[in-house]
Amino acid sequence: MAETKPTATVKASAPASVKKSGNSISYLAPIICILAGYLIWRFILGNPSGFKQIISGGGFWPTYDGPKNALNKMYLGGIIVPLLIGTFMTMLTFAIERFLTISKATGTGSNADFIRKVQYELANKNVDAAIAACDKQKGSVGNVMKSGLHKYKEMIHNSELSTEQKVLAIQKEVEEATALELPMLEKNLVFLSTIASVATLLGLLGTVLGMIRSFSALGEGEGGGDAASKLSVGISEALYNTALGIGTSAFAIIFYNIFTTRIDGITYGIDESGFTLTQSFCILYK
Image (tube, rainbow, N blue to C red; front, side, top):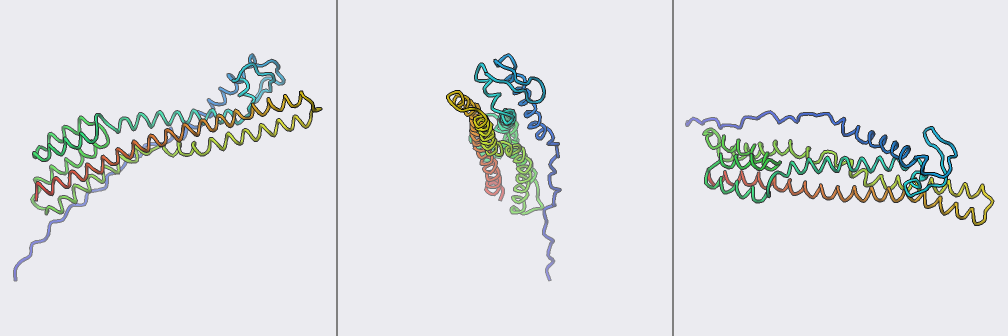
């Protein structure tokens, strides 16, 4: 009876562990921005020199009358205004942070040109030149491709595994590298999507509260042209909340869509890089 040799198996490598970096800064940023929004509202928009009359000065929420310009009218929009200013600053903070991170992840040059160059080098069996191209790319696609190429180079000289097992090993390496890159790309996008929904609601809440105050003041007055004038002024002040909320929400939606589109492009490049490695190996090293 003929002896059967045991089939070589791929050694299971330990899953790549993602270094858990504290995300405390991401949660502190909204708090800091809201505090900054209150300070802007309290001491810049609510500067006493911008009003004709000081009804009650000092404290958490001073009361003024007779605003001299649009910024001072915004102060009279109420306590929701500093929340909206803080929300707008939070949106800008995460938009800048995502822009810098995704720009770095995009790397240098076109991903399509980079993948074509790697394909050319692999077709000529020049793996080292392909790895050098990854170093020049400096992006997420280059990082994933580089990890796969190191495994690719290792599998070329491996005589124990079958071609199918070698391809699976390359695929696994690419998947692990991808698992390290994608969370970094999508991090903090949830703040932009949340602000896009919440900002409009906050603006409407501020408007409703302002309208309540305006109609309450109208009910306490004697009526006439003066009351109607005060009502129109109160409504215009309340509508500043709506303007701030809608504006913040609009910017958050625009930035969110821009970033998700760029992330989709990077993800497509990563998928294409993995396909390139496995197809090249199957063709050249059967």
